[in-house]
View 1 (cartoon, helix red, strand yellow):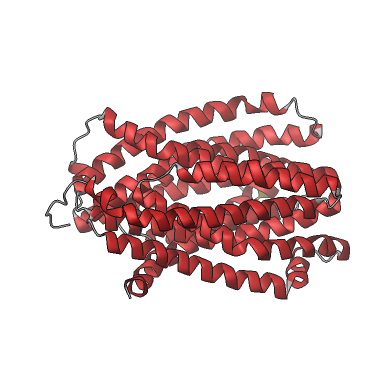
View 2 (cartoon, rainbow, N blue to C red):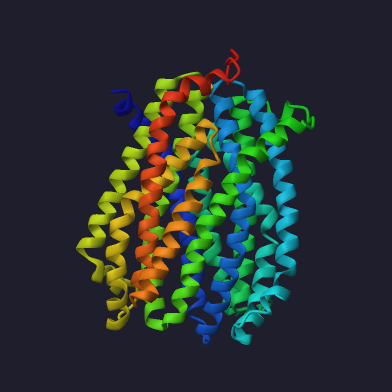
Length: 462
C-alpha cells in the first residue's frame, strides 16, 4: 500500500522531468536535422557528430561531479534544514566554477589533439570552430545544471520542463539564423554552417541559465527559503562531501557514455550500412532511455527527502515505486520495438538495406529495455541514500569487463558485426540491471543505519 501511495507523488515529480529530458534530447536531434540540410551535409554532419561526442563525453563526465548535489539538497530539504541546503547550493556554484574552468581549458586545446586522428581533414577543419562555439556555452551549462539540482530538490520541477521546451524553440530559431545565413535590408547574417549550430546551442544554453535564475529568484520570494540572506562562508568539509558524492557519478557517466562511443567507433569499420543501422537503434534506445533517466532523478529526490525526514518506509516505497514505473514503461517500449521495428526504422530512412540493418538491432534493443530502465532507476534510488560509488563499479564491470569482450567475441569471432557488438551491450545491461536492483533491495535493510547518520530535522516554516 505504501508503494501504491507513492506512485502519484512520484509521477507528479517525474513527468515534468521526463518532458525536460526529452526536450534536451530533441535539441540535439534538431541540430542534426538542420545541419544535415546543408549542401555538403556529409562533412557537416561528421564535424557536428565528432564535436558533440567529444564535448558531451567530457562535459557530462567532468560535470557529473555536480550531481552529488542531488543527495545533499534533497536530504536537507526533507529534514527541513533549509539553511544547510542553501549553503550546499552555494558550494555547488563554486564547484561548478571549478569544473567550468577545467572543461573550457581542455576543450580549448582539444583541436590540437584531434588533429592527430586519421579523420577526413575537411571534417577536422570544421570540428574545431564548432567545439569553440560550444565551449563558450560551458559556464551557462554548468550554472543551469547547479540551479536545476536546487529547484528539483525543492520539488519545483515544472520550471525545468518549461525551460527545456522553450529552449528548443530558441535553438531552432538561432539554428535557422546562423546555419544558413540571411539577408535583410539593413542586416546581413552570414551562413556559418555547422559552426552556426554550435553558436545556436551556446545561446540556447545562455537562455536556459537565465530563465532558471529567474525561477530561482521567483521561488525564493514566494517561499522565503532565505538563499539570498544566507551569508557565504567557505566550508572545506562541505566541499569535500560534494566531491566525494559527485566524483563517482561523473566517472559512472563517463564509463557509460564512452562504451557506446567505443562501440560506434568499432562498428564504423564494418561499413556504412551497419553504421547506419547502429545509429537508428542507438537513437531509439536513447529516446526511451530518457524516461527512466527522469524517473531516476525523481527517485533520487524522493528517496533523499524521505531519508532527510527520517522515514525509512517512505524511502523504501519511493525506490520501489520508481522501479515499478520505469520497468512498466520500458516493457511497453520493448513491445513496440518487437511489434513494429521495420516501421520505426523506415521513419529514419526509406532505404531498404538500411532498414534491414537496423531491424535485428531493434530486437536486441527490445530485449534489454527492462534492464536498462532498472539499472538507471536503481542508481538514482541509491544516490538518494548517499551511495554514489556502487554504480561506477557495476558499470565498469558490466560494460567493459563483460559487455565489450562479449561483443567483440560475437562481432569478430562469429562474424556477426554490429549484431555481435550489440549482443555484448545487451549482456552488459542485463548484468547491470539485475545487479543494481539487487543492491537496492539489500540497501533497504540498511536504511535505519543510514538515517541514523542524518542530523535531526529542524522545525521551520518551510
